Amino acid sequence: MKKPVIGITLDNEKPGGYSKFPWYAIRHNYLHSIELYGGIPFPLFHANKYVEDIFHIIDGLIITGGNFDINPKVYGEKQKATRIIKSNRTNFEIAICQKFLNSSKPVLGICGGEQLLNVVCGGTLIQDIRNHNPNALKHEQKNPRNETSHQVNIKKNTKLSMIMNKIEINVNSAHHQAVHKLGNDLIATGYALDGTIESIEHIKHNWCIGVQWHPEFLITNEDNLLIENFIKTAGNI
Image (cartoon, rainbow, N blue to C red; front, side):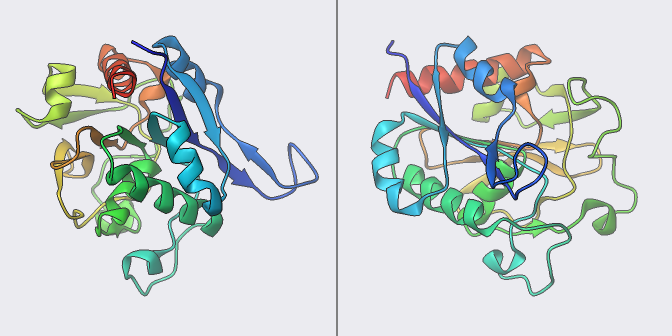
C-alpha cells in the first residue's frame, strides 16, 4: 500500500495568543494519529481557489472540529449562531467536502466535521443541545478530553459497526451542537443514551463517515480501528 496523503483542515484564529498576526492551528494528535497508521498528514489552509489542486494532491480528507459554529444561514436557519462563526473556514470546508463527495476518496468528519458533512448534504443542526434537551448528557465533558465520558450505541450492519466490530462503545465528548435533520443520503449510525446522533455515514459514497467524538486521541481500540481503516482505504484508492 502506498503512503496516502491525508488532507486535514486547520482551524484559524485572529491575532492574539500565539501570534500578533492571524494564525492557523491544529492539535498534535490529529497529525500523528494519521502518521501512526501510515498516512502523511497534509494540513489544509483556507483557499477556495485551490480546491481543485488540493483535491488532486490528497488521497483522503479529514474535516476537523473547533470552538465555533457554522453560520445557521448556511442551512436555512434564521436564528443567530450561539458562538463565533468562521466563514472563511466553513466556506473552504464546504467546497473541499463537496469535491470529495463527488469522488470515491474517503472522508472522515470529526466532531464539528460531522456537522459540516451533514450541512453539506442538506441537513440541519441542533443549535445548542442543552437548550434543545435540558435532560441531555454533558456533551462538553468536564473530565480531560483524553478520557471517555459516555456511551454510544452503534447500529448493526453499518460501515461503522463493521469497522469496529462492536455495537456499544465509549467515547470522549466536546460539542454543544449535533445533527438534527439528516442530510441527503446520510443515515444515523450511532446514538448517545439521550438520543443525540453521534455518528453518520453516506450510503452512496465509498467511505464517508462522521463521528461526533474525537477518535484522534486513540483512547479506545475502536478509535484506532476507525483511523486505521480510513488510512487503509485512502491508500487503496
